[in-house]
Image 1 (cartoon, rainbow, N blue to C red):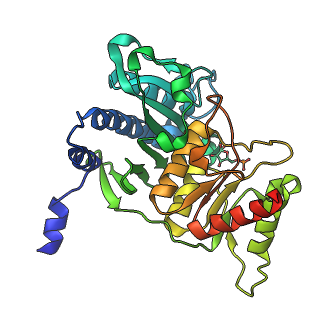
Image 2: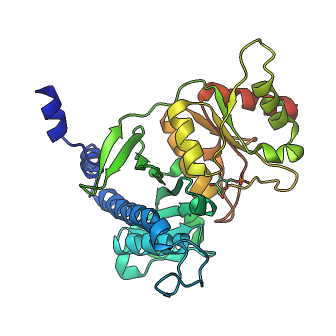
Length: 337
Ligand code: P6P
């Protein structure tokens, strides 16, 4: 009857988060409530993304769709959903969204002790061709929620209490860490529940895949160029690595987490700080990689040690299998000599 037992003992994300809460005797359940609101946002976005192709939800804001209704771009819609879900949770005091130039300070009546930095729909330029996109989020505790300022948001990534992403693709997968390892949950649309499908994810220590936009090769610095050259023409007689680049960070990072290898978005002459944003792309993905036994490097330091000075600051990023990132760190150390 083992099979039956498995089918009836469903580990949902709600149950998992409650189990985590019970590990901290002093926890009052605020993070559990916050995460349940994020999960609700992800379910809504999953349904909107899946309908997008049909209801012609895609397209630029301002266009009208078949019902001649005011057109809202999916990332604008997703941002509104997450801001409303987070504020109504009563557990946040400041929000940073990729979609909003300024941080959102929650009104006192609804203020809670957490700050959430998120990209509501990362990779949204890929929606129209059906490539997987995703929501990325990182959660911090705020010292004094009554007097929260922007300084409270500009913390190093190592202070995060939780981080995760939800990938909207062939299936809807939410990958989460609350500081005690990484777990993956897949949405069962018939139940409307995220079910634990990838328990305790650990990234392989070394991988056979490198993931970078080779189109930027002309502008790379020496260590990045050397690393990619070694991937393609290994000197030690090993076989060359495979290049896999989807161009949607959530999809490229998810593959890296499960299969191993390294994802790079280096600095280049055009963008000296790279392209990816510190607070809601680099930090959450770096937190997950470390929790899964990998690591994440900016070209100068451990990514989670970086202290951002602006909420939309960018940073170069090299993240993935521990050994692969070590190799890149060695090449940057040589350059620094
Ligand atoms: P490029 C998508 O636009 C995004 O923000 C990330 O999801 C992705 O990793 C990156 O940009 C792709 O950038 O310059 O290679 O197209």
